[in-house]
Amino acid sequence: MAQAISPPEAPEAPEVRAEARYSSDAAGLGKARAGAFMAPALLLIAVFLVFPALWVLYLGLTNYRLTGAAAAEPRFVGLDNLFDAVSNPTFWDSTWLTVQFVLGSAVIGQVGLGFTIAWLLRERRGVVKRLVEGLVILAWILPSAIVSFLWVALLDRDGGTLNALLGLPGFAPLLDHPMLSIIVFNTWRGTAFSMMLYGAALGNVPPSHLESARLAGASGWQQLRDVVFPHIRGHILTNLLLISLWTFNDFTPFLLTAGGPDGKSEVLAVHVYKVALQSGELGYGAAVSTIILLINLVVAVFYLRLLRSKK
Image (cartoon, rainbow, N blue to C red; front, side, top):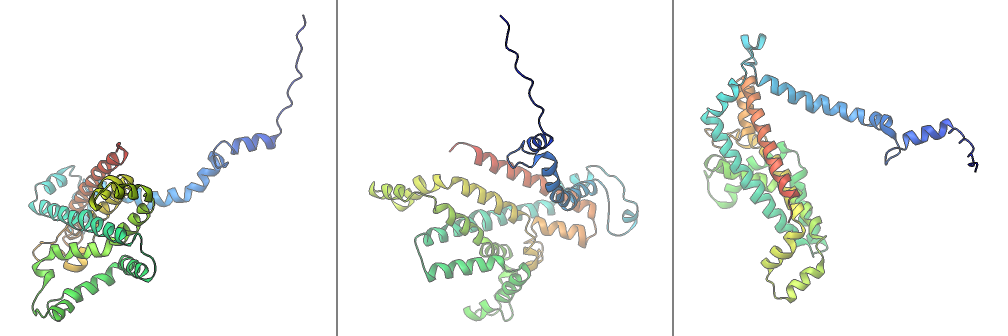
């Protein structure tokens, strides 16, 4: 029995083939057009992020200085700068001060104060809520130089606003308690981000769950522990990751105390500035920056593993 022979298919028009080629992805652009759109952004990332990072890694392997013979003809020293850093007591002192700074102003200060403000304002409306949010956000958006000048004027030993209000002439928090001063300053400065993030997160907690917990006799802390925190766990970890990294690399304390007195507030960012630019040891400073980068990577991986783990 003869089989029916189907007629040959008509060739696709060039327009159809081109449309199919450019519609192979979700946006319908195709790899060539998508690459063209991304090229400017990738170029900026390469110029301002990738190249400086690679350059710092290279400098950390040399004895490069800002002045002298090592500036004209830097010599490759391998990992000597890294070994010098980890054997330097000043580096470990700065690392411990940085840990205090991050734990005090970011993990405890900004997270705690930001969540408290968001929790207290979650059901409020009107002028009070807008006023509090506006004041908190204002501290966040003002330039660092301006707010640092205002805090120096507030805490100044001679004629400072705080001394005038408390009637304590000669009281100098920036000299007597430098770490506490920059921790309080950074908490005040950065709370806005945590407040806004937690405010959005609390809006996603089902009111019916809180009501059920109240009817079951749960206390306020039990409602937070068993209902609120499990719902916003991802927001908490994301916030902790971001503000921890920001605070770890923050240079603003230099504007208040310049790392003093006697290095009592010399966090790692200030330590790198002093050894690399003030002392001119650019190779050693680059090596310390590499260590800071590795610490940031470890912290980021730790938070991301927590974020991806099951509740």
